[in-house]
Structure formats: C-alpha cells, structure tokens
Length: 83
Image (cartoon, rainbow, N blue to C red; front, side, top):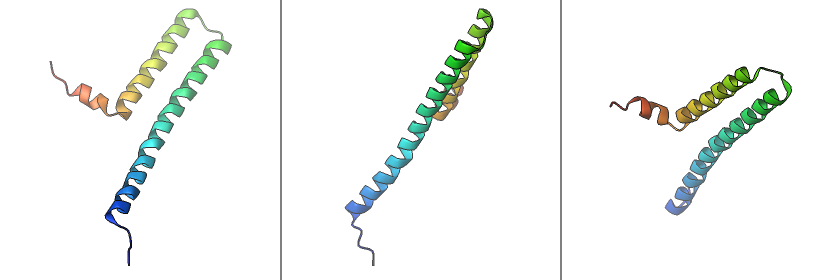
C-alpha cells in the first residue's frame, strides 16, 4: 500500500525537479569560475605578446558565450531567426 497523498507526490516531484535544476546551474557556475581562473593564470604567468594575448582572451570569451547559449537553449533559437 502506498500512503503518498497527491500533495506529498507533488512535493516529491518539486524536490526532484529542484535538484535537477540546481545541479546544472552549479556546473555552469563552476565552469565559468574555472575558465576565468585558468585565463587569469595564463595571462599572469605565461609571457605572450599583447596582441596574441588579446586574441586568445577574445577567443576564450566567445567560446564560453557560445557554450552558455547552447546550454540555455538560445543558440538554436538564434540560428532559427530569419531576417
């Protein structure tokens, strides 16, 4: 016999949904922090010409922004826009 009421089932479903939505946000935040720290370490401790460093930073930022757009599902939405 299952004694779970509809209210309890809704609460369990909400808690499972909350856990599923928090973990990806934590992962996204972790990736952004790790990328920023690695970029800072490379900029601070690896000698490079200023122009190369500027291009490298721009490429890393563009890659992270495209990745974020894909994660949030906006990349396909933006690709479907026809002017």
